[in-house]
Amino acid sequence: MAQQSLVLPAHVANRTLPQWLPPNLSADKIRSCSRPDAIYILPLVVGTQNGHQRYIQAVHPLRWDVHLIEVKYCDETRPEQQLARATEQHNGLKHALAQQCHKVSLQTILIGVMGTIY
Image (cartoon, rainbow, N blue to C red; front, side, top):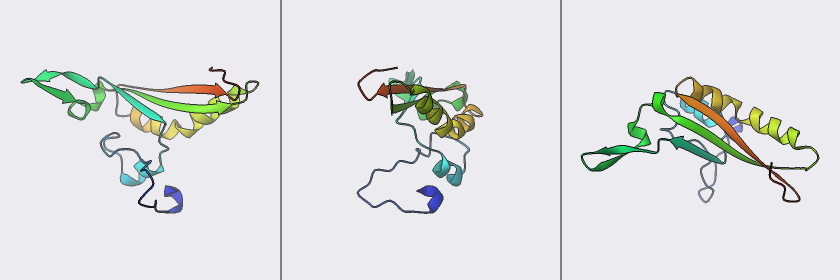
């Protein structure tokens, strides 16, 4: 949608990346990246400072361990196609974050149409 300059209706959830996630990326680059189903960043809470918890935004990205999580459905006989599709879909975001963060990995959960989890 972003590549086609389409605007989301007000009742639709925002599927772009949060502005604080990819530091030092332009707004155009953020909109062009595909958002995974979940983003898990360690450490989410880093100790306390004066009795207050510190959140990930207060930690320099070089100390982030970022996990991009994608859930895909696939045929039980051909899971490789969806695995390759997930890798290609999030390659741009993974590469952009890897330049700024300590570690970035893509975790793909494949679920077969009959319920098999790969």
